[in-house]
Image (cartoon, rainbow, N blue to C red; front, side, top):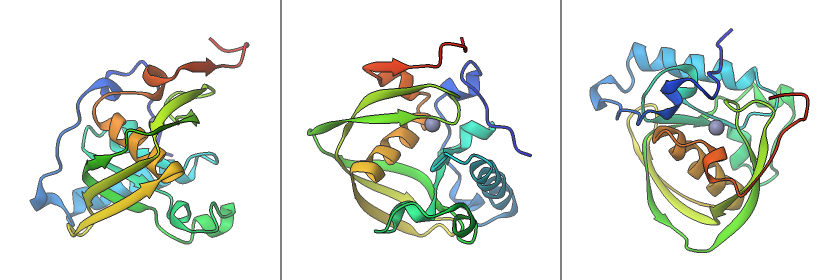
Length: 172
Ligand code: ZN
């Protein structure tokens, strides 16, 4: 079982390093992707995970495949039949000035949710797991995920950006 690193650990606050292009497609990267996938799938509410969240300070994240479906999030069983989508060395190429206030949580900030202003449109450039370039134009939920995950790679957590936080009273 891969443990998801929680807020307070300094790996979540570091600026993650670019993945070396020569490493893409190799065994080390395949192992990291496997670990990230296991950690994501072990979290019922998770839709994405960044490498620092499993203790790898590298610029990469994974997003559930079903997030990109028009029909939206699929059930638990279907979810595990398709590997998550891999984004390596992502860069936000364009971001809208127009923002939405969105509800947000994080696998590394267990039990806490908050309202976070996020641009409603972003264009993301990244490499896939084979090193192929891709550009994705995203809006709303997917745009929110991209911003949240790119923040992780710069050591930023959603609680830093939240305008309002809600946490269960029994936890502190
Ligand atoms: Zn997160």
